[in-house]
Length: 155
Image 1 (cartoon, rainbow, N blue to C red):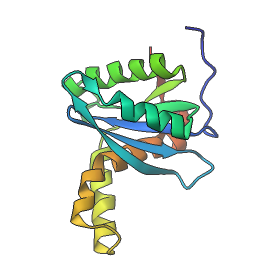
Image 2: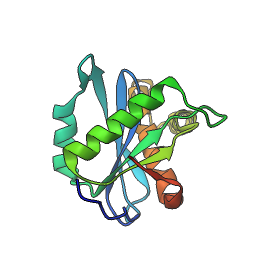
Image 3: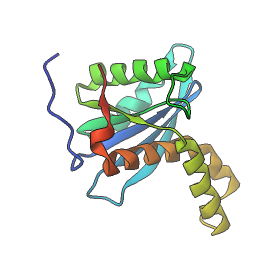
C-alpha cells in the first residue's frame, strides 16, 4: 500500500471507540462544531458489523479515521488495545484512508459526564444511554482536533 498523506484537521473523519461487544462511531471535522455521535455498531463472533460500517463510510466519505487507543491510566497496555489496533489496521486496508490512533483514556468517563449534563437539562433520556459509546467516539475525535500531533499513525 502506498504511503498516505498526513491527515489534516480540515478533513472530515470518522472516529471509533472500540469495545469487545460494541464500537461507537462519530463524525467530526474542524469545520463543524467538533464531533457528534453517529451510531453504535455491534461486534459479533466474526468481527464488527462491516455492512453498517461500509454504509457509514459511503454516506460520510471521510478523508481519514481516528481510533481510540485504549491505555491504562498509567499509560500501559491493556487487553482491549490489541483489538483496537487490529480494527484500525482493518479500517486502513478496507477503506484506504489514513487511520490514526488517539489516546482514549477517560473518554468513556467524559462521555458519561456529558450524558449526565444533557439528561439533567432534559435534552437526553435514559434510553439514550445506549449511545454512550458513540459519544465516547466523538470525545476521541475532539481530542485529535485539539492535539493532532499527539496522534499515532497505525503501523
